[in-house]
Length: 255
Image 1 (tube, rainbow, N blue to C red):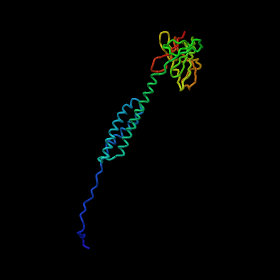
Image 2 (spheres, rainbow, N blue to C red; image 1 turned 90 degrees about the vertical axis):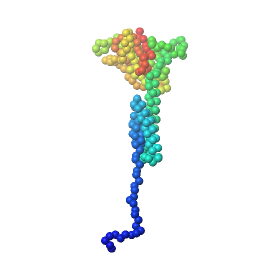
Image 3 (cartoon, helix red, strand yellow; image 1 turned 120 degrees about the vertical axis):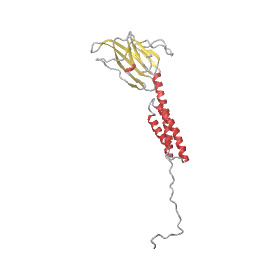
Image 4 (spheres, one colour; image 1 turned 60 degrees about the horizontal axis):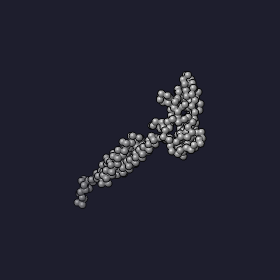
């Protein structure tokens, strides 16, 4: 055999194989995915989810662009683009649902139950009118106020002349709740305030000899609860606040 490789005429020149270039990953798809993740994680947060709404909307647009680019073959990452688009749509829906839920909760809290009727605990021979009275700011002690959520509240008695551990004057007030509605109703000692003759309103105070303090909780339909509240100084009115956002609509005048 020759030192050099023998030339064979039928050998053809074969050019080096050319590798097909891979399309770049869709930047729009990646951006849409990031925006969708951020929007979904913050979609449950009040106020902040206003920004989540915009992020989800922008991410959905980027996702559509990414899907189109991958379908045409100019970019790769079609599963990523589709996932990002779906994620942004879900985040968008969650934001809308969350905002609707918080809006309904705020509307319910701000409207609050209002007084629709009042009845004395003592029986009366006169028929009671079915029309709600307009003024509940000067109810007598022992009168029950009926709220439109089915809850009835009453100042049963007022005890003056109590003395605290430091000698300061204390007024004790016994209140009661009755749930006449079909759903649970809440009760809380912070529903109540006392007003003195000068118009100053005060929250409940600590009393060293307190008994049967009113706590907080909820009442099942048909449930009742009674408890004592204690206020500093003299009391001219006892106020019931049906909502944290509005002034008291029910008040009992202390004789």
